[in-house]
Length: 416
Image (cartoon, rainbow, N blue to C red):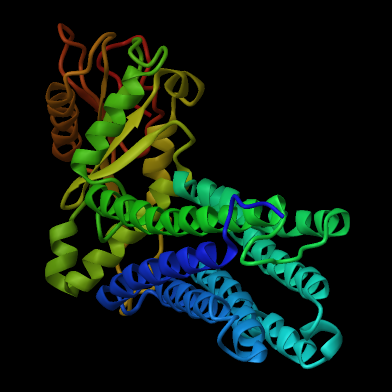
């Protein structure tokens, strides 16, 4: 026996820790009652806390209450935590509630047999198998979530649950090598060390869950602050920041990139004639089209009203010199589900080639806006490339004409 760890004391400490954690999780859930993950995690840690309280009463309570029901609640707590992970990752699992409770039911049924209830070694092996299985159950759910939505705290949760399950697996060979016997509250060193480790793992796992909830909330608040609520595109401020980051990257500040402003033609007429719902439908359809058709590397955002900003890096302008003209033509094929049917949607586009070096965003937009005005003045439904700083006047390309590219050598031709 090792006199390093006093098992009843460690059990009480673990129970106290779980009580505190479950209290904090319950408070979080009380402030966000619609959060199913917090609900299950709160119930899970509460179940674990109650189970550890019962186990700590092993010298006072009947064995079925202290060891049977106590460990059953502990196993069920991991099932509830698994349900919380499913809810957090928005995963639908058929029969999840039955699976979560099955381990505890199996344990209670087996505990009715004296071969298990009266033999410490057998109890350790059976309980370890169930605890390990339910610890590992959460891992694939969290791992899949991490691939979809990387969160630093989720990595800690994966390590905590993985270590928890691995420790219970390790109990099998250790129990065979040095069977556990508890004498005056003391057990072999490996058993006490693992009990202390479970105390730490429970604390780390709980902190990881708190951090996961906080990180997701922070990310979603940030996303909401950067996203236009109607179109789900970047809003003006986020668009500016995204372009600035792109220009700050390797080779991003070279010459040849383009800034374009896309404006829905006759949008006020659609609003006045068919209502604002129709106008919203047109904007959503237009944004879906732009998001779908713009190649990787391009950046699109809503500048306000019916105006949208498009940033094209230099390599994209070189590879797709007629991209803006292709977009203009494709917009006219957009359809909406609005009733009555809406008239054909067209856009006017103004674009400006960007010089090398740091981006003066306001100046770039002003030049693109000037080109957009030229498109409107020319009859709408066309693309205009702003003149170079010392070039001739802007010159739009009409709907049926052949377009040259944004990177065309002439300073006054259309961006296509």
